[in-house]
Length: 264
Ligand code: SAH
Image 1 (cartoon, rainbow, N blue to C red):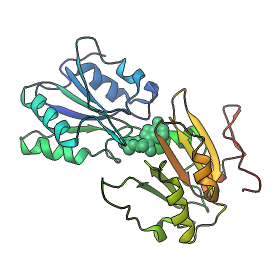
Image 2 (image 1 turned 60 degrees about the vertical axis):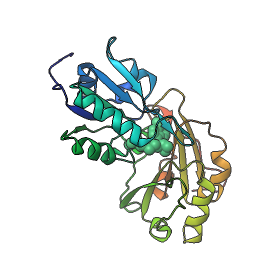
Image 3 (image 1 turned 120 degrees about the vertical axis):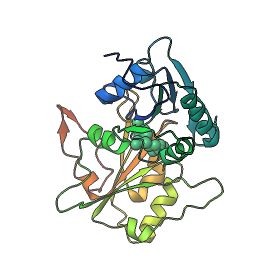
Image 4 (image 1 turned 45 degrees about the vertical axis):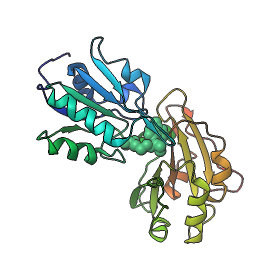
């Protein structure tokens, strides 16, 4: 599997590392990790994936977690550019899929300014992993014809400016990234814009990892329910399609906890 010619010197690959479980890496991602001579990785890239990086390959943590910025985006861009210009074989590992809330265009633009055109290897995004763990479908005939990926994280100093009326669409499933700390505000805004109080919600932390936690609730109870989560990355799935899964069992085990009293 270790093809040292897969990445040319000076070439950069933005690689999706998936939600955390190393078995959810694509084969291509694994080949690229094995072929790099330097790997930059985010805080969300799990230890099981970092274990795949061969000894002797330089690994650089450029982890960013909400409220705990270890390196700012500009510094990260500079480091990747410098590695490419030095002729290294660069893998930039990003949690989930690089094209979803991954700031990959900023890194691509910085590289392009120096004549480097990075390539992209897609990954499994957190919403797909969450749906799989909970045994549900993000779209559902008759209930969810639309799937919306939205982030509840605003740039430092900015207020969250979302089109709540559109987001409250009863025919959609909402996958909210980075929404745990603003769960109460999200619930309030969605209900104020017409979402039914009993709309099912699934909050999932550390999807695909042994530490995974799933909380099944409904929108009017969301703020209290998210207090049951720890400090890991968490995703909110909101909509009627999410409730439709509560009676399905996956691989012989019950997919998720039942809804609170009276919920659908
Ligand atoms: N590019 C990533 C998303 C990066 S934004 C992707 O495609 O998945 C970071 C947010 O993703 C986290 O705050 C959380 O909302 C979500 N996330 C990432 N990994 C997750 C996981 N294993 N379980 C639950 N949510 C996760």
